[in-house]
Figure 1 (cartoon, helix red, strand yellow):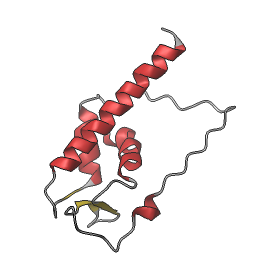
Figure 2: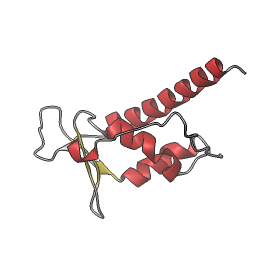
Figure 3: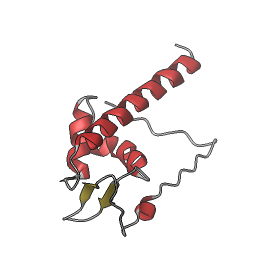
Length: 111
């Protein structure tokens, strides 16, 4: 397999994971809440992964996602807002900053 094919296959997989998360979030009714751990575990099962392995995908997708709030802590989770509802709680604390050093190798996740 060429490197280009591997990258394209990986992008397709990530897109599929994002779409599953998005479909699940969109299926929530306004005002409902789900634990981010529960959501990650649900989707991870489809890929033979664990929730902690797939959680970074969820964090990337939910940062800035429209009409949701992600709260931390025991009473936290992903809260779906109504279309016209605004929040005084900002998702800005959930910003993700990725820095990739070209000289470092990426971790390998065994599934």
